[in-house]
Image (cartoon, rainbow over all chains, first blue to last red; front, side):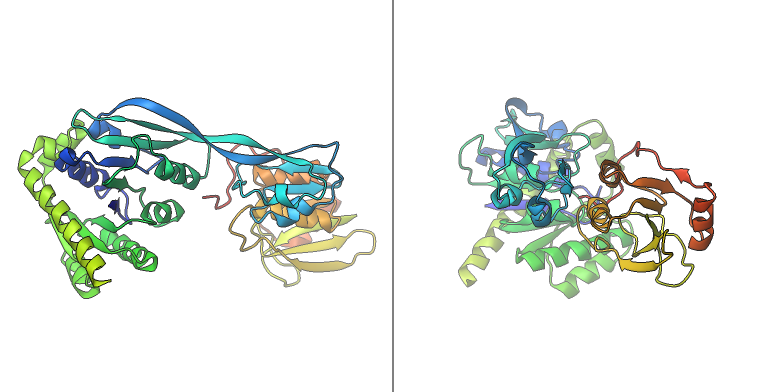
Length: 288
Length: 121
Protein backbone atom coordinates (compact mmCIF):
# COMPACT_ATOMS: atom_id res chain seq x y z
CA UNK A 1 0.00 0.00 0.00
CA UNK A 2 1.24 3.44 -0.91
CA UNK A 3 -0.04 6.30 1.23
CA UNK A 4 0.86 9.87 0.31
CA UNK A 5 0.63 12.63 2.90
CA UNK A 6 0.18 15.93 1.12
CA UNK A 7 -1.30 19.40 1.51
CA UNK A 8 -1.89 22.37 -0.69
CA UNK A 9 -0.64 24.81 1.90
CA UNK A 10 2.86 24.52 3.33
CA UNK A 11 3.43 24.30 7.07
CA UNK A 12 0.13 22.57 7.84
CA UNK A 13 1.77 19.56 9.46
CA UNK A 14 2.44 17.01 6.70
CA UNK A 15 5.63 15.78 8.26
CA UNK A 16 4.13 15.80 11.78
CA UNK A 17 1.27 13.59 10.59
CA UNK A 18 3.41 11.37 8.35
CA UNK A 19 6.07 10.71 10.98
CA UNK A 20 3.41 10.10 13.68
CA UNK A 21 1.70 7.58 11.45
CA UNK A 22 5.00 5.86 10.67
CA UNK A 23 5.84 5.58 14.38
CA UNK A 24 2.35 4.30 15.18
CA UNK A 25 2.76 1.43 12.71
CA UNK A 26 6.49 0.90 13.26
CA UNK A 27 5.94 -2.81 13.99
CA UNK A 28 4.88 -3.22 10.34
CA UNK A 29 8.32 -1.90 9.27
CA UNK A 30 6.97 0.74 6.88
CA UNK A 31 9.10 2.42 4.25
CA UNK A 32 9.09 6.17 4.80
CA UNK A 33 9.99 8.31 1.77
CA UNK A 34 10.70 11.99 2.40
CA UNK A 35 9.76 13.31 -1.04
CA UNK A 36 10.10 16.97 -0.06
CA UNK A 37 13.51 16.94 -1.74
CA UNK A 38 13.92 20.73 -1.69
CA UNK A 39 13.68 20.83 2.11
CA UNK A 40 13.61 17.32 3.58
CA UNK A 41 13.07 17.40 7.35
CA UNK A 42 11.42 14.12 8.42
CA UNK A 43 14.82 12.72 9.47
CA UNK A 44 14.81 15.24 12.34
CA UNK A 45 11.87 13.35 13.88
CA UNK A 46 12.57 9.75 12.82
CA UNK A 47 16.37 9.97 13.33
CA UNK A 48 17.48 7.21 10.94
CA UNK A 49 21.11 6.14 10.69
CA UNK A 50 21.93 6.69 7.03
CA UNK A 51 24.11 3.93 5.63
CA UNK A 52 23.14 3.82 1.96
CA UNK A 53 23.38 6.57 -0.63
CA UNK A 54 23.55 7.18 -4.36
CA UNK A 55 23.75 10.14 -6.70
CA UNK A 56 20.85 11.11 -8.96
CA UNK A 57 21.92 12.19 -12.42
CA UNK A 58 20.27 13.20 -15.67
CA UNK A 59 21.77 12.25 -19.05
CA UNK A 60 22.59 15.55 -20.73
CA UNK A 61 23.92 16.09 -24.24
CA UNK A 62 27.53 16.88 -25.06
CA UNK A 63 28.17 17.79 -28.69
CA UNK A 64 31.22 16.55 -30.59
CA UNK A 65 32.28 19.65 -32.53
CA UNK A 66 34.13 17.49 -35.07
CA UNK A 67 31.00 15.65 -36.19
CA UNK A 68 28.46 18.46 -35.75
CA UNK A 69 27.72 20.56 -38.83
CA UNK A 70 25.36 22.96 -37.05
CA UNK A 71 22.23 21.64 -38.79
CA UNK A 72 20.11 22.67 -35.79
CA UNK A 73 18.02 19.48 -35.61
CA UNK A 74 18.79 19.08 -31.88
CA UNK A 75 17.53 22.59 -31.04
CA UNK A 76 14.44 21.99 -33.17
CA UNK A 77 13.42 18.80 -31.33
CA UNK A 78 14.21 20.05 -27.82
CA UNK A 79 10.85 21.01 -26.33
CA UNK A 80 12.60 22.44 -23.27
CA UNK A 81 14.75 24.85 -25.32
CA UNK A 82 17.83 23.51 -23.58
CA UNK A 83 19.87 23.57 -26.81
CA UNK A 84 20.47 26.59 -29.00
CA UNK A 85 22.36 26.42 -32.28
CA UNK A 86 24.00 29.59 -33.59
CA UNK A 87 25.74 28.99 -36.91
CA UNK A 88 28.09 26.12 -36.11
CA UNK A 89 28.02 26.77 -32.35
CA UNK A 90 25.84 24.58 -30.12
CA UNK A 91 24.99 25.83 -26.63
CA UNK A 92 23.61 23.37 -24.07
CA UNK A 93 21.80 24.57 -20.92
CA UNK A 94 21.93 21.63 -18.49
CA UNK A 95 19.50 23.17 -15.98
CA UNK A 96 16.79 23.37 -18.67
CA UNK A 97 17.44 19.81 -19.91
CA UNK A 98 14.98 17.10 -18.86
CA UNK A 99 17.22 14.28 -20.10
CA UNK A 100 14.65 13.01 -22.61
CA UNK A 101 17.30 12.02 -25.14
CA UNK A 102 15.46 13.40 -28.20
CA UNK A 103 18.48 15.38 -29.40
CA UNK A 104 20.73 12.33 -29.22
CA UNK A 105 18.25 10.17 -31.12
CA UNK A 106 17.50 12.79 -33.76
CA UNK A 107 21.05 13.97 -34.49
CA UNK A 108 21.74 12.96 -38.13
CA UNK A 109 25.50 12.97 -37.55
CA UNK A 110 25.57 11.02 -34.26
CA UNK A 111 27.48 13.98 -32.85
CA UNK A 112 25.75 13.90 -29.46
CA UNK A 113 26.88 11.85 -26.52
CA UNK A 114 25.03 11.79 -23.20
CA UNK A 115 26.92 12.34 -19.97
CA UNK A 116 25.56 12.17 -16.43
CA UNK A 117 24.77 15.53 -14.84
CA UNK A 118 24.28 15.46 -11.08
CA UNK A 119 21.00 16.84 -9.69
CA UNK A 120 21.14 15.55 -6.13
CA UNK A 121 21.26 12.39 -4.10
CA UNK A 122 19.31 9.71 -2.24
CA UNK A 123 20.01 8.43 1.26
CA UNK A 124 18.56 5.57 3.27
CA UNK A 125 18.84 4.00 6.69
CA UNK A 126 16.90 2.45 9.55
CA UNK A 127 15.36 4.26 12.49
CA UNK A 128 15.69 2.68 15.91
CA UNK A 129 11.97 1.78 15.82
CA UNK A 130 12.55 -0.21 12.62
CA UNK A 131 11.19 2.32 10.15
CA UNK A 132 12.87 2.00 6.76
CA UNK A 133 13.71 5.59 5.93
CA UNK A 134 14.79 7.09 2.60
CA UNK A 135 14.98 10.64 1.36
CA UNK A 136 15.98 12.61 -1.70
CA UNK A 137 18.04 15.79 -1.60
CA UNK A 138 18.05 18.25 -4.48
CA UNK A 139 21.44 19.94 -4.85
CA UNK A 140 21.47 23.67 -4.11
CA UNK A 141 21.04 25.64 -7.34
CA UNK A 142 19.25 22.85 -9.19
CA UNK A 143 15.71 23.75 -10.27
CA UNK A 144 14.15 20.34 -10.99
CA UNK A 145 12.82 18.28 -8.10
CA UNK A 146 10.85 15.71 -10.10
CA UNK A 147 13.77 13.54 -11.29
CA UNK A 148 14.95 13.22 -7.67
CA UNK A 149 11.47 12.22 -6.44
CA UNK A 150 11.09 9.75 -9.31
CA UNK A 151 14.47 8.20 -8.54
CA UNK A 152 13.59 8.01 -4.82
CA UNK A 153 10.31 6.23 -5.55
CA UNK A 154 12.01 3.73 -7.84
CA UNK A 155 14.87 3.05 -5.47
CA UNK A 156 14.52 -0.08 -3.37
CA UNK A 157 17.24 0.18 -0.72
CA UNK A 158 15.36 -2.30 1.50
CA UNK A 159 13.92 -4.50 -1.24
CA UNK A 160 10.20 -4.56 -2.08
CA UNK A 161 8.09 -3.07 0.70
CA UNK A 162 4.45 -3.68 1.69
CA UNK A 163 3.66 -0.37 3.33
CA UNK A 164 5.00 2.87 1.92
CA UNK A 165 4.45 6.34 3.37
CA UNK A 166 5.32 9.20 1.05
CA UNK A 167 5.79 12.60 2.69
CA UNK A 168 5.02 15.05 -0.14
CA UNK A 169 6.35 18.52 -0.83
CA UNK A 170 3.84 21.37 -0.30
CA UNK A 171 1.71 22.79 -3.10
CA UNK A 172 0.09 21.16 -6.13
CA UNK A 173 2.81 21.47 -8.77
CA UNK A 174 4.76 18.76 -10.66
CA UNK A 175 6.71 17.43 -7.63
CA UNK A 176 3.42 16.84 -5.80
CA UNK A 177 1.83 15.20 -8.85
CA UNK A 178 4.81 12.84 -8.94
CA UNK A 179 4.44 12.05 -5.22
CA UNK A 180 0.69 11.37 -5.51
CA UNK A 181 0.93 9.31 -8.72
CA UNK A 182 0.52 5.62 -8.07
CA UNK A 183 -0.64 6.12 -4.48
CA UNK A 184 -3.55 4.06 -3.11
CA UNK A 185 -4.68 6.89 -0.85
CA UNK A 186 -3.80 10.52 -0.24
CA UNK A 187 -4.09 12.06 3.18
CA UNK A 188 -4.50 15.83 2.86
CA UNK A 189 -3.39 17.82 5.87
CA UNK A 190 -5.00 21.21 6.31
CA UNK A 191 -5.86 23.78 8.93
CA UNK A 192 -9.27 25.43 9.42
CA UNK A 193 -8.21 28.82 8.06
CA UNK A 194 -9.04 30.59 4.78
CA UNK A 195 -5.54 29.78 3.46
CA UNK A 196 -5.92 26.18 4.53
CA UNK A 197 -9.26 25.91 2.77
CA UNK A 198 -8.09 27.61 -0.41
CA UNK A 199 -5.13 25.27 -0.84
CA UNK A 200 -7.12 22.21 0.29
CA UNK A 201 -9.54 22.79 -2.59
CA UNK A 202 -6.62 22.79 -5.06
CA UNK A 203 -5.19 19.62 -3.54
CA UNK A 204 -8.60 17.88 -3.68
CA UNK A 205 -8.91 18.84 -7.36
CA UNK A 206 -5.52 17.28 -8.00
CA UNK A 207 -6.40 13.99 -6.26
CA UNK A 208 -9.64 13.71 -8.21
CA UNK A 209 -7.80 14.50 -11.45
CA UNK A 210 -5.36 11.69 -10.62
CA UNK A 211 -8.17 9.37 -9.54
CA UNK A 212 -6.69 8.75 -6.08
CA UNK A 213 -9.06 8.60 -3.08
CA UNK A 214 -8.42 11.23 -0.42
CA UNK A 215 -9.16 11.94 3.22
CA UNK A 216 -8.50 15.01 5.30
CA UNK A 217 -6.54 15.68 8.47
CA UNK A 218 -7.61 18.87 10.23
CA UNK A 219 -4.58 20.10 12.10
CA UNK A 220 -4.64 23.00 14.58
CA UNK A 221 -8.32 22.30 15.03
CA UNK A 222 -10.11 24.99 17.01
CA UNK A 223 -8.63 28.01 15.25
CA UNK A 224 -10.20 29.72 12.23
CA UNK A 225 -13.74 28.86 11.22
CA UNK A 226 -16.08 26.08 10.07
CA UNK A 227 -15.54 26.45 6.34
CA UNK A 228 -13.09 23.55 5.97
CA UNK A 229 -15.67 21.26 7.61
CA UNK A 230 -18.44 22.60 5.40
CA UNK A 231 -16.33 22.18 2.29
CA UNK A 232 -15.35 18.58 3.16
CA UNK A 233 -18.99 17.74 3.73
CA UNK A 234 -20.13 19.25 0.44
CA UNK A 235 -17.23 17.71 -1.52
CA UNK A 236 -17.82 14.34 0.18
CA UNK A 237 -14.23 14.09 1.45
CA UNK A 238 -14.00 12.38 4.86
CA UNK A 239 -12.25 14.11 7.76
CA UNK A 240 -10.29 11.22 9.28
CA UNK A 241 -8.56 12.81 12.25
CA UNK A 242 -8.37 16.16 14.05
CA UNK A 243 -5.36 17.39 15.98
CA UNK A 244 -6.24 20.29 18.29
CA UNK A 245 -4.38 23.57 18.30
CA UNK A 246 -2.22 23.12 21.38
CA UNK A 247 0.97 25.06 21.97
CA UNK A 248 2.46 22.12 23.89
CA UNK A 249 2.56 20.25 20.56
CA UNK A 250 4.34 23.17 18.93
CA UNK A 251 6.87 23.27 21.75
CA UNK A 252 7.59 19.55 21.49
CA UNK A 253 8.04 19.73 17.70
CA UNK A 254 10.40 22.68 18.08
CA UNK A 255 12.54 20.45 20.32
CA UNK A 256 12.69 17.79 17.60
CA UNK A 257 10.16 15.58 19.35
CA UNK A 258 7.51 13.91 17.27
CA UNK A 259 3.84 14.29 18.21
CA UNK A 260 3.33 10.67 19.30
CA UNK A 261 6.68 10.61 21.06
CA UNK A 262 5.80 13.69 23.14
CA UNK A 263 2.14 12.68 23.61
CA UNK A 264 1.85 8.86 23.50
CA UNK A 265 -1.92 9.18 23.99
CA UNK A 266 -2.04 9.92 20.23
CA UNK A 267 -0.55 6.52 19.32
CA UNK A 268 -3.85 4.60 19.33
CA UNK A 269 -5.51 7.39 17.36
CA UNK A 270 -2.89 7.12 14.61
CA UNK A 271 -3.19 3.31 14.62
CA UNK A 272 -6.93 3.75 14.15
CA UNK A 273 -6.29 6.24 11.36
CA UNK A 274 -4.11 3.69 9.60
CA UNK A 275 -6.73 0.94 9.97
CA UNK A 276 -9.40 3.31 8.73
CA UNK A 277 -7.36 4.13 5.59
CA UNK A 278 -6.65 0.43 4.95
CA UNK A 279 -10.38 -0.35 5.25
CA UNK A 280 -11.23 2.41 2.80
CA UNK A 281 -8.71 1.11 0.27
CA UNK A 282 -10.01 -2.47 0.62
CA UNK A 283 -13.59 -1.27 0.31
CA UNK A 284 -12.76 0.67 -2.84
CA UNK A 285 -10.98 -2.33 -4.36
CA UNK A 286 -14.01 -4.48 -3.56
CA UNK A 287 -16.37 -2.05 -5.31
CA UNK A 288 -14.16 -2.22 -8.39
CA UNK B 1 21.33 46.31 -39.11
CA UNK B 2 18.19 44.99 -37.45
CA UNK B 3 17.35 46.49 -34.07
CA UNK B 4 14.74 44.89 -31.77
CA UNK B 5 12.74 46.25 -28.88
CA UNK B 6 10.67 43.99 -26.64
CA UNK B 7 7.25 45.66 -26.54
CA UNK B 8 3.99 45.27 -24.63
CA UNK B 9 1.56 45.86 -27.53
CA UNK B 10 1.45 46.12 -31.32
CA UNK B 11 0.53 49.82 -31.10
CA UNK B 12 2.72 52.56 -32.54
CA UNK B 13 5.15 53.93 -29.96
CA UNK B 14 4.29 51.02 -27.63
CA UNK B 15 5.95 50.74 -24.26
CA UNK B 16 9.05 48.65 -23.75
CA UNK B 17 8.35 45.31 -22.03
CA UNK B 18 11.08 44.77 -19.46
CA UNK B 19 10.93 40.95 -19.52
CA UNK B 20 12.94 39.67 -22.44
CA UNK B 21 11.87 36.01 -22.70
CA UNK B 22 8.19 36.65 -21.99
CA UNK B 23 7.57 39.87 -23.86
CA UNK B 24 4.41 39.70 -26.00
CA UNK B 25 5.98 41.21 -29.15
CA UNK B 26 9.25 42.14 -30.78
CA UNK B 27 9.39 45.40 -32.71
CA UNK B 28 12.11 45.06 -35.34
CA UNK B 29 13.48 48.21 -36.92
CA UNK B 30 15.72 47.94 -39.97
CA UNK B 31 18.09 50.87 -39.39
CA UNK B 32 19.03 51.13 -43.08
CA UNK B 33 15.58 51.10 -44.67
CA UNK B 34 13.61 52.34 -41.63
CA UNK B 35 11.17 49.45 -42.14
CA UNK B 36 9.34 48.32 -39.03
CA UNK B 37 8.00 44.84 -38.36
CA UNK B 38 6.13 43.43 -35.38
CA UNK B 39 6.67 39.75 -34.56
CA UNK B 40 4.85 37.75 -31.93
CA UNK B 41 7.16 36.16 -29.38
CA UNK B 42 6.85 32.38 -29.86
CA UNK B 43 8.19 31.84 -26.33
CA UNK B 44 5.52 33.92 -24.57
CA UNK B 45 3.57 30.94 -23.23
CA UNK B 46 6.37 28.41 -23.36
CA UNK B 47 6.40 26.30 -20.20
CA UNK B 48 10.18 25.94 -20.29
CA UNK B 49 13.21 27.87 -21.49
CA UNK B 50 11.44 30.99 -22.74
CA UNK B 51 14.71 32.94 -22.61
CA UNK B 52 16.68 30.58 -24.82
CA UNK B 53 13.75 30.12 -27.19
CA UNK B 54 13.18 33.87 -27.64
CA UNK B 55 16.91 34.44 -28.14
CA UNK B 56 17.12 31.69 -30.77
CA UNK B 57 14.10 33.21 -32.53
CA UNK B 58 15.77 36.64 -32.79
CA UNK B 59 19.01 35.12 -34.04
CA UNK B 60 17.08 33.28 -36.76
CA UNK B 61 15.63 36.67 -37.73
CA UNK B 62 19.15 38.11 -38.06
CA UNK B 63 18.72 40.68 -35.32
CA UNK B 64 21.95 42.51 -34.45
CA UNK B 65 20.83 44.67 -31.50
CA UNK B 66 18.33 43.91 -28.73
CA UNK B 67 16.87 46.41 -26.27
CA UNK B 68 14.88 45.06 -23.30
CA UNK B 69 14.73 45.49 -19.52
CA UNK B 70 16.13 42.35 -17.95
CA UNK B 71 17.88 39.43 -19.56
CA UNK B 72 18.12 36.10 -17.77
CA UNK B 73 21.52 34.37 -17.76
CA UNK B 74 20.51 31.84 -20.41
CA UNK B 75 19.05 34.39 -22.81
CA UNK B 76 22.06 36.63 -22.28
CA UNK B 77 24.57 33.92 -23.05
CA UNK B 78 22.73 32.87 -26.24
CA UNK B 79 22.53 36.45 -27.54
CA UNK B 80 26.11 37.15 -26.51
CA UNK B 81 27.39 33.97 -28.20
CA UNK B 82 25.66 35.08 -31.41
CA UNK B 83 27.39 38.46 -31.22
CA UNK B 84 24.15 40.37 -30.66
CA UNK B 85 24.58 43.74 -28.94
CA UNK B 86 22.49 43.76 -25.77
CA UNK B 87 21.08 46.95 -24.25
CA UNK B 88 19.00 47.46 -21.14
CA UNK B 89 16.48 50.26 -20.61
CA UNK B 90 13.64 51.26 -18.30
CA UNK B 91 10.03 50.88 -19.33
CA UNK B 92 9.19 53.77 -21.65
CA UNK B 93 7.87 54.68 -25.10
CA UNK B 94 9.84 52.91 -27.81
CA UNK B 95 10.32 56.04 -29.96
CA UNK B 96 12.13 57.76 -27.13
CA UNK B 97 14.31 54.70 -26.54
CA UNK B 98 15.06 54.48 -30.28
CA UNK B 99 16.19 58.12 -30.20
CA UNK B 100 18.30 57.35 -27.11
CA UNK B 101 19.89 54.44 -28.99
CA UNK B 102 20.70 56.63 -31.98
CA UNK B 103 22.23 59.25 -29.69
CA UNK B 104 24.33 56.58 -27.96
CA UNK B 105 22.49 57.06 -24.67
CA UNK B 106 21.43 53.46 -24.02
CA UNK B 107 23.23 51.29 -21.53
CA UNK B 108 24.84 47.97 -22.50
CA UNK B 109 23.52 45.05 -20.42
CA UNK B 110 25.97 43.09 -18.29
CA UNK B 111 25.99 39.32 -17.71
CA UNK B 112 23.28 38.47 -15.21
CA UNK B 113 24.75 37.88 -11.76
CA UNK B 114 21.77 36.15 -10.18
CA UNK B 115 19.51 33.24 -11.02
CA UNK B 116 17.26 33.13 -14.02
CA UNK B 117 13.75 34.40 -13.65
CA UNK B 118 11.97 31.89 -15.84
CA UNK B 119 9.24 29.70 -14.38
CA UNK B 120 11.72 26.83 -14.27
CA UNK B 121 10.15 24.29 -11.96
